Length: 173
Image: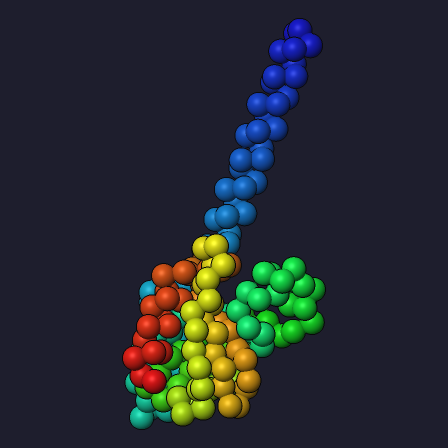
């Protein structure tokens, strides 16, 4: 085999290997029973037990919330600040009375409330955009500045879902 042909063969094998690794990685990021519609219905049922039967769930999804203002740290170039602040992955529920940040405890088969913001405690809400990313930025009396975004799959920001959440939140304020 000529040296050039050998290099091409090795390059082709490496390209296929890298493609396979990328496909497996991305498949793992968006798969999982916790994101299926059936699982979402089960989680909503469990969430009602925590937030109360008198509240109506308007929107729910997996997502993140953190205690700084949207994407300001990225815009200012101080991304180190984000690592010092709290960012939490959780199940986010918008009800007619406010927002609940819930954590699923597998050993209990139930949610625990991490934080919540009552509707009357919300002073200001803004939809922050940074590229394709979206974040709902909330200034609340109880938690101060809080930002949240919703997810598609295990790690991708759901821009449309976050925008829909923002619109629904604005409708109840």
